Length: 203
Ligand code: ZN
Image (cartoon, rainbow, N blue to C red; front, side, top):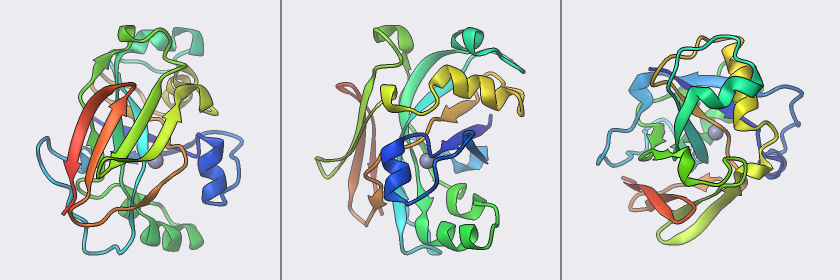
């Protein structure tokens, strides 16, 4: 299983990091070892002083596909969730400055939180779903899929031009504004509409 992540997919997050609006989706990957095991706490790695939470809509691929056309992309996933793309922002800034790959800052062990999946049929439209991250019961990030620069179907089509999608692969679809550092004892909870799909303790 592979984890494909999209960067810079919400205008308000591009602005908060003072990044340029990309002409095409920004794509990177995490290995399967990045998945935070269920019921495990997130341990802040010793190589970073500034690990940020990024709440994102996650879709699970249910069919093998390559060169998927946008109009057929909806057939390649049934289930969606929310997850966290944990990012060592200090390390990422150094790597970006030198034009180096982001993996050490983005793909380390535990950096991919994946919540419980729900059938997309529970929602009227996947292009209008609210999601939210709370930290110690306070809302820290809020988004809606209608605000994505590239919609889920467009992302599935785009990434499948480069990588064959396989059953069980997941796509993290980018984070809205509000990214911030986590600290020990934080409790992070992710919601799709009113459904809580994960709860993570930070250590
Ligand atoms: Zn992200």
